Image (cartoon, rainbow, N blue to C red; front, side, top):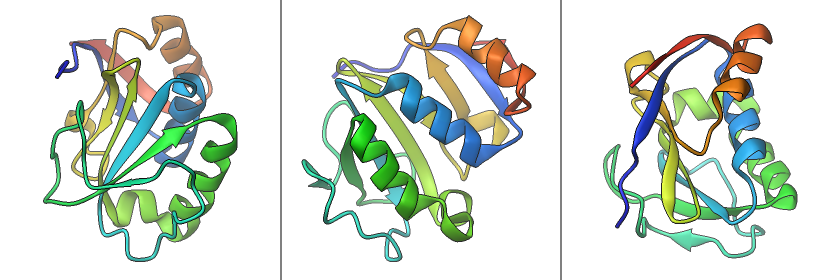
Length: 142
């Protein structure tokens, strides 16, 4: 299992926008792992869904979870399930995205600012864009 080599710690301002931008930035040859209260989410139509965590994901929040492939089509399916009613912050305790077998984004403890980080696959120029757009308050090297 390849563990995440943190490149930057993030201070999120707009958590839904941050997740959506990260899913789009990292989609293709990637997967997202979600842990928390998934009872209000229906991922049955997402092709390739895996119940439970698999490598390289590690438990960050309780047990259980789901792993979903990230492609342009699935990003929209996932968004429709996670975003209504603030589910991604209220119900989902941990979100991890892997690309090419390595975890490259982690938002743990309900997006607590000391628990959100990215790996080396996320360019610093992209993070600067997120700051300019108001999605992040800022970021710092890990």
